[in-house]
Amino acid sequence: METLFNTEINKKLNEAEFEALLQEFKTDYNQTHFVRNKEFKEAADKLQGPLRQIFVEFLERSCTAEFSGFLLYKELGRRLKIMKMNLLQKTNPVVAEIFSLMSRDEARHAGFLNKGLSDFNLALDLGFLTKARKYTFFKPKFIFYATYLSEKIGYWRYITIYRHLKENPEYQCYPIFNYFENWCQDENRHGDFFSALMKAQPQFLNDWKAKLWSRFFCLSVYVTMYLNDCQRTAFYEGIGLNTKEFDMHVIIETNRTTARIFPAVLDVENPEFKRKLDRMVEINQKLIAVGESDDIPVVKNLKRIPIVAALASELLAAYLMPPIESGSVDFADFETQLVY
Image 1 (spheres, rainbow, N blue to C red):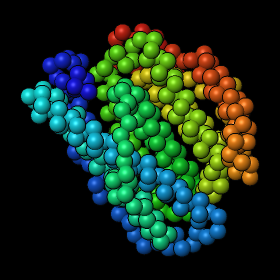
Image 2 (cartoon, rainbow, N blue to C red; image 1 turned 135 degrees about the vertical axis):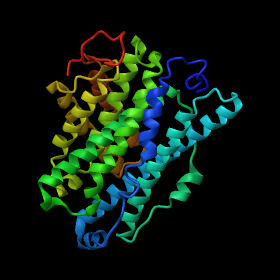
Image 3 (cartoon, one colour; image 1 turned 120 degrees about the vertical axis):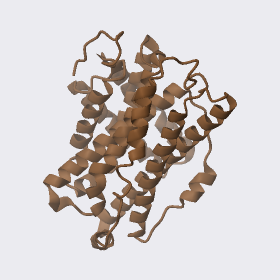
Image 4 (cartoon, rainbow, N blue to C red; image 1 turned 60 degrees about the vertical axis):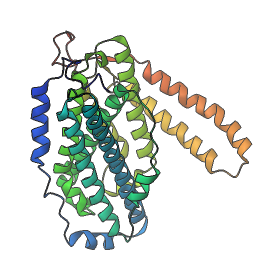
């Protein structure tokens, strides 16, 4: 981390770009956006049966994810500020401040979601999550790849749901969706910041290893979302969406956005890619069925072996599909034209 943001060591830090991003975050467009009204509680009381439980699970998962982002950004900002003091002011203070402001955004999102849970007479103990946190070391480039994708895919998920409900208001079951248009712009700004961080580190984007890692993280994020959402089709059907069509739209748009910065991305518009995702869903359902069976643990583990092997085979086959050679249009040394 010391070399990434040290303004004397890393001459590629575009300070003007980071200053512009900092001003965006300082403007805080959504400072007064997340204001609740009586419609929240009224809508929650009307939600009954299976859809109510499914919606509560959605709020819980979303709240936990946003709070995890808050913890990550807060910790990164804190560590950069410490390094700034230890390195005699050489570390870019703008980057540290942006991390702190992004943690503000994530905390605001998590708090808004947690208040939504209160409409259902529930609440998450976010303080417990803070105390129980455990840190695992990852190389910065892995954090950048994964978090960039997480923020951009979050943007496309939120804006797609918002636009769908705008066109189909009969499925507007809870007012939180009305906030998604502005909300997703926070996700977009966060993703743009990580894009700037990667552009400041060309070694993360311009060699064969970067291409392999880029495809790996794309596959990991896309498959995780697809498998998770296919276990919760009732939620998406409850707001009038076809789960698989929604997910593929989000994956394709995220991939097109990601192709502007990653040196290689998956060919997700190839019909074979979706076929592989659907086969993974079928395999994952078998894996879940084994876990829910009454077999003893030893038998369960034996049954899982061929299923896990089949899932790994599909993952590898998807990874080895011919990729889309892309790369940032902001780099002079990327001469390959974007396919999209």
